[in-house]
Length: 121
Length: 138
Image (tube, rainbow over all chains, first blue to last red; front, side, top):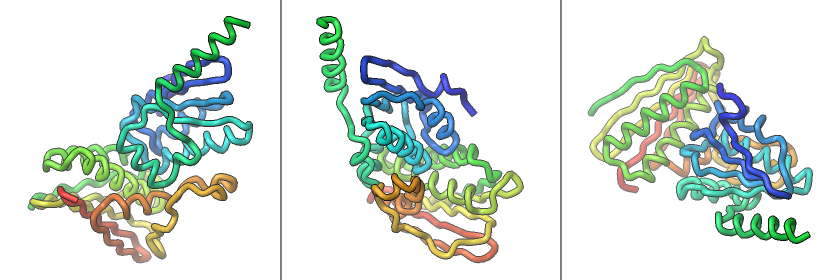
């Protein structure tokens, strides 16, 4: 239904990739496009849900595919800007065991540290 | 009591139409925002199940009947598939084994059972009816 570029926007640092999910509905219709858009992960892959208004179990399924793919490479997946309702749903299915939530300031601190170490080296 | 009857093709894109209708009705009836979110997700899961397992293909259709009561919204989702043996709400959490084996679906019925106040399932060889009730105050 939608092309890859309209579904995900990437931001990258050294070993971090921040994937902003641009569709507001992570469901069976958008799942394939999201899955296709998120093939190039980094050791720390962060999914940004700031624009996501709805997630159902089909959407959770595609998120779990990230987790499986990341773990095969020894990578970790985190989620950012998860709404209170979606935090409740993630806790209900124990999603956060595999995709912990990260705070924006922690991510910023980590990427700033990385950029400092790169410029000092 | 007011009733609204939708009949959608068995195509997942139309799940969004039913979900949007449920959200609008919940808001109009004065449901708290969090209850509207619960309603949207429960209806989405039920309609997705009906589309995926209730006959499938554009030739099929799914019926959705909203019944608006003073204190609750009742949503009946009817498909014309082969029926289900039982409504499995047992798959509750993401399990390590499921990740390894690629079993990444199966939370829908569990989510429905947790998010609505009451539900009833009737199924036969000619279709399944799932009736959800969600009250304004939980």
